[in-house]
Length: 358
Ligand code: KG4
Ligand code: ZN
Image: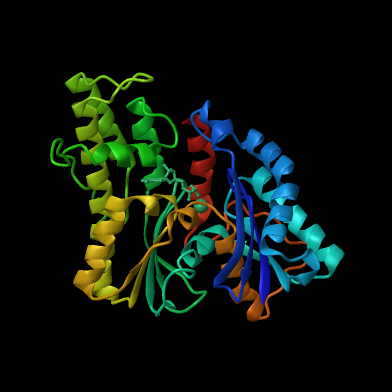
């Protein structure tokens, strides 16, 4: 089965052609990072306009690189939500028009479920029950996946997403946007024990994550220690590198510590770590070590599949198409689409605000 995937939920316009949900024929991603960079975060209105400019060439290029015509595909999978409404509508409208014009089956895919499927291309088949830790700029959720397509949230962030914390701390330190990659690079040269931040715990005893208190602790440390943020073109100081390493270390400990504790209770057979923050090598190493202690394989997507892409949407969509699922032309964007028992509403509302304000 040949599926065309289309993704436009945030600031990447992407299209991909995937065979049988596992083999990537093409994956084209047009990133808007440069356009949003000077605002320090994604500006929704600009994102929608960029998607409008890019959607046609991106889909055409994905088909051309795969060496197929739109008539050859067996179905179209498109991100339905969660995401920015104006951005989602561009991909959705295009996918619906294509499905109608070519009389192709159409399915809507949850973006977060797409991230989970990003590991299927380069790893052995997932054994269930699985754990899926999805960490990105907008989400931080640990799911129990008892079988394909069923999700239960075991832990979620109460405030900022992990990627958002990386972005905000980078901004405080004058390191620009997005923050994750630059913090990771500086952390390699810093001492993770230099500043003692503690892993946040919930007062109610639930295993949820929280990163906004940590962000405040970093800001307090910067203020009280007199640490100077990095100016453009300047080599970051030892203090900045140590702070980056200490911050990254506590985020990783929080994510992996909670995952490992819950894994001991639920005994998953696979550990999946996905989303933009899964690019982070410190997180990968810690999750792989936890997997080894639990005697379960840990799967990560490679870098180009960790951040937003359409191959993962096509893969998740293939499972739905094979199960006979079909969307009508009334398929609509859902900015707070749920996955399992989680209410993405709060996450997305926060993401829209937080990223705009960054
Ligand atoms: O999945 P993604 O591309 O978009 C969202 O759906 O949000 O994730 C982007 C997020 C950003 O917050 C970025 O700072 C973070 O992923 N990120 C990283 C790294 N690379 C990207 N965070 C930590 N370490 C990295 N190497
Ligand atoms: Zn994403």
